[in-house]
Length: 292
Image 1 (cartoon, helix red, strand yellow):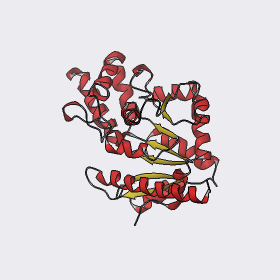
Image 2 (spheres, one colour):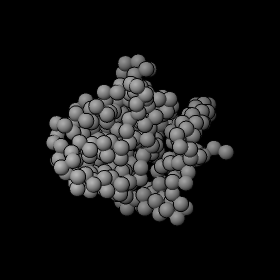
Image 3 (cartoon, helix red, strand yellow):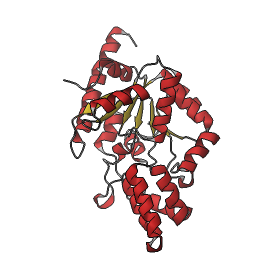
Image 4 (spheres, one colour):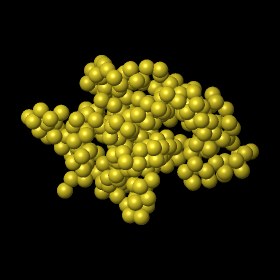
């Protein structure tokens, strides 16, 4: 039995769906010497060690913040302690220098053939997968660009990088201050995201429900549009008990889709391949009936 709801398959087939993918997708990639992109927790834990022995108390407090999931505060303290240049160099060393290759999951997501994709990831792995289709396969826009709306109205595939890109490390959104500044300086971008939530179906893949952008966007949508359609959040089974699922579904207005949990999350790729097949079949049917 498929885990994919028919309404979601139909929305994707009609290209009325927005793909929002997070760090869980990038972590499938492999770079030089077999290294993989770190999780937020792993990267910040490593960065905290750059502070040095004389500041052991601060390092301990940072690790406690990371353990509690408060990555934004942890990142801000780390950056303040080791300074911007050293922090930026560490970001480049862990997310760019290893030359990560696109994983099968990136290609599968690209094959869903959706016009709009959004990611907080600042690596270039998804663009690498798109580039295999040839130059111009995708247009990449950054949260601070002033022509995103114009690109979305054109008939081209667009990737929006909501936290910035590794090629402009000084404009990455990492900390609480970064978030506050971005929301103030680029309010039109967040208004655009809200408009997309109202007019499209979102599918979140490889994301956490505690991501500040995701929570803020979905909570605002939930209370501004109480009768709007729910979006879809893909996660491993057993991540949430039924009671927590019910609260998340209600407070964030999402339908939770679970794939069978394994340590390597291999079933996510398998289920996404099934989704791609279902979408292709639905598009064939839509073409026959001319019911786009």
